[in-house]
Image (cartoon, rainbow, N blue to C red):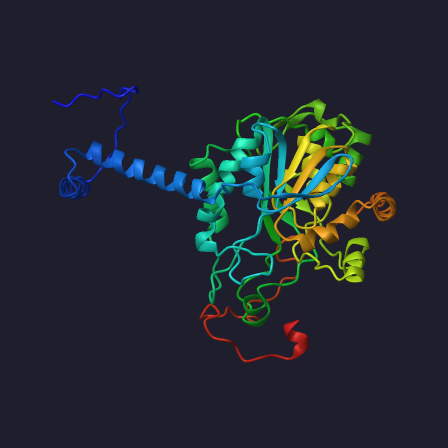
Length: 410
C-alpha cells in the first residue's frame, strides 16, 4: 500500500453525498484517467484549478516595473501605468487601510476606458484580487463600486457582479462586511429599449457597492457618518417615547429616545450624479484633455473614507480615473495613491489639486454642503392605474408594441 510521505500528512477527511449514478460516473472517469480512487481524482482536479488560478496571476504581473510617478501632492501620488505593477512591485505588503475603487464594469458595449466583457470579468479580476489581498491590512477594507449589466438583446441581467463577489469570498478569503446600494436619483431611464419602448422593465438606477475585508473585524465607526433625524424622530425626541414591545416582537427600550446627534444611515446611499460642468470639466475642455466618462461623485468615497479610516491612514484607488478618491482623501487628510493607465485622464485630474483651482472648488463644495439635500422615494403604486386601462404585455416584450404619441412614451 502506498504511503503518504509528504511534509503535510493527510489527517483530514470530508464526506460528499452522491447518487449511485454520480458515484459510478466518477469512478469510471477516474479509472479512465488513470486514478486509483475518487480521492486521487478530486485532488487532481483541485490541484489543476489552483495551478490555473496561480498561473493566471503570475502571467498577469509585469515582470519589470514600468509604472511612473505622474503627480504628487502633500499627501498623495498619482501613478501612470498598470495597477498590477503597483500592487506587486511598488506597494508594500499590508500597507493599505482602504482600497476604494470603481473598476471598469463588465458592460456589454465596449467603452473607451477599457471595460471587460461580463463573461470574462472574473478571470480578468483575479490578479487584482490577489494584489488587493497582498497590500491590504488586516484592519483595512476593500470597497468596490460596481454596476450591473444586461444580457445583449434580452431584458435579463448578467450575474457577473455577483459572481465577482462570490469569487472574492470563496477563492480569496475576503469577508463580505455589508453590501451597499448607491441609488442615483438622476439616472436616466435605461435600458431605453426595455424601459421606455417595450415597457417591461423599470429604470435601472442602483449600483452595488461591496464592502469586504480580510478579517471579519475591520476598523469602522458609524458615528462618523450619521444622517439627520427624520421629522418623526425629532418629534419623538422632543415628546418622549414609551418603551414597549412592537407588533414585530422587537422591544424598544427607553434608550431609543436618546439623542445621539443623528441617525445611523441605511446601506442605501442616495447620491445624485449630475455634474456635467465644473472646474474639472472646464479644465479638461480648456486644455483638450479627455473627460473621464464614469466618474463617481465625491460623496461616495467620502462616506467610506470617513467610515473606515483615520486621518493619516492610506487610501488606494487602483482604477483611479480622474482621481476623485485622491481628491477626497487629500481633503480629509488621508495619504493616498491613485493608479491609472490613461495619462490623458491624469492630466485632467491634476486640476483637482492645483492650489488656485482646488481651493476655489473646496470653497464651493463646503458651501454646497451647508444645504440639506433630500431625495424622495415614493411608495410602490403611489400612482395606481386600473388594470383594465393598462393590460399586461402578454409576450413580455418579445415584440415591440404599436407606438404611442410622444407624450405617452415619455
